[in-house]
Length: 210
Image (cartoon, rainbow, N blue to C red; front, side, top):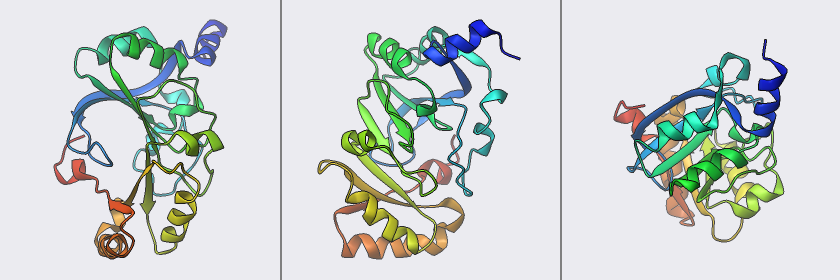
């Protein structure tokens, strides 16, 4: 049971339910192949049935951790920091991003965009989900739109989402890992016929790195 003091700190974003943090190679999307330090925040109620980190969903399983500690760890490893989840925008990201940027770090987020946007981001990767669509602000500021393709109907969803993002957003289609053999050829054909899109792969899984 959290104390009231800790609950207040979490609500303010001074503490966050930290699931894990690790230094690795960005595996997917626009920054594929670059070194980055990942901060995975617990808590998500979007509920994608194919989610590969379902252990992140229950925030109560992940200890509230002071943002100073998170930032202190992050700055030892990389100039690029990726905040992911779970769904990081479940929480107020203002304090975390202020402190990361005070260390002259590049701060990226990977989000479904389902909650109000908080924080100051150098790169905003929007990966929308049908269960809980993004808020308007997420579409407006997205640098990258990454749509996961699990079945053929997801191409329709992808186009619906592409119509909502700002004109500068870079568009990616990424096969859901368990369906990659089936969906990757369809994505390749789709991108060749609709070259506004790019292919994203989960290269970190092929390379067997976190």
